[in-house]
Length: 629
Ligand code: ADP
Image (cartoon, rainbow, N blue to C red):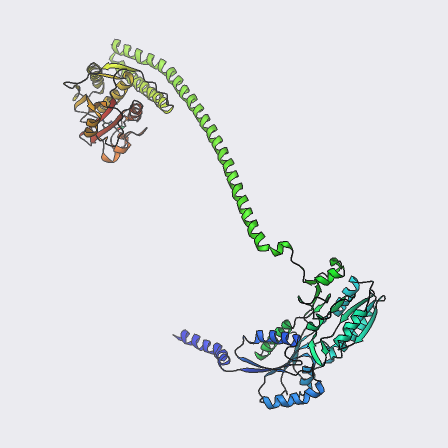
């Protein structure tokens, strides 16, 4: 709670004074300009000043114009002070802004008056800053620095053959300062002859320009021209000083995009000066430090492209930071947007085409690689298959010998001690033989190389033979309660056109499993012929695509251990031996059903089963019943 109170008090402490100032304390500035509204420099400075000050709601400014361009300062000064005194409350202003020499001189002349006493001064438009000591006055300002030496040097560099340098001044304070400055540094140019001319009259200047020739060059300092008693800004007059004249004319501040007759000059932007003055004023009013006290913004050296061409000036001779106005836009700049948009589209199209080409090439490369990999795989697959076939064959020969001889020994042997060993050899070699056969089948199936030898078989005989053979087999397992029989249909076809060897293999697999996974009950082997529709009704093969009209359905039913529901989906998977999961070990590697299913698929049949755990299983399959061709 205490900390909340403390933060609240701190907030009050920090924000209270600003709030007060923002709401109440309005400061007043008196902005005095030497010249009149409409005079370009004056208007520019005023505009810049306004732009910055207008953003400060707590500052009011009052602009006054002395008009000393058109009326003598001797006349203006006393009447202007009386005017201000009558208009404003003497203690009203917090700061005075004075633009140009006359305004500053006016302030100095009345510095002890009630209006100006102890008021800080901020000025601009002063060239001869060293002549203003500002004794006992708090003064800051923007000095109107000139680059005269640089522009005169540029005139000499561009036109070295023009020896007579005419500098035309008028009678203003600034011009007299410029005159002495120029006279001093022109002494360094021995080949040039500086001729200073004083004139306020535009007609006389035009006459002078028209009389000058190939050895002359002109710098015009005049800010205004008088014509028939009226002062006009020289910016408008200069455009009326029309050729023919044969001299390059340089001038200050007049040169811009609309000035055709001036070749070059120095440009001071009044707006920039006005802004600087306003920023200084705001700082002073807010009690911030103003540093440096006097600013010296640099003027720009500007050249007129038309005149540069007119006098065949080599552009590389211009100062490095020169600004060229009136330069015709190159075709690129003229149609810049159009060209850029088109270029973008062309680049985008090219990029898309390139991407497509690269993509296509990559695809081709990948396809080739895939084809090569496929060929290689096929080759290695067939190599593998023939290798497995060879190895299986090579293993089978000695294996047959072992099985055969162990069988003979088993029958001939009278020594009971060896009975167990011989039996073991016999059984193991049988398992090994089955495994070798399975692996061989698997490799043939994978290589799609299972060859079927169709023949007509008589099913009742075939089944009979199978049952007899397996009854002998059951005896080996020592499962006395387990029986095996076949169930033949009472009517119907008895022959099946099929690969006998493979059919035998499939049924034998099912019987083997039934014997392996049952202990009691009768294993029943049955067959029946059905139409496609009957098969669909009888079995779970509704979705299976039965292509043939007739099928032979063969089943092996047992009452053995059955298959748990959760393991049913794995029964036909390769090397899956479910009994490892849910009961003890039985001999087998988990290939029998997978091979049977694959063989049946090759033969156009299908296999499935139904099974209930602990109750028994029925494995059934169908084989197409095709008449012998
Ligand atoms: P295995 O060589 O292991 O018998 P199979 O592919 O023939 O391989 O059979 C896969 C698995 O399916 C067997 O391991 C067994 O768990 C189960 N199985 C197959 N037939 C039966 C059946 N009649 N009764 C119970 N389980 C069976």
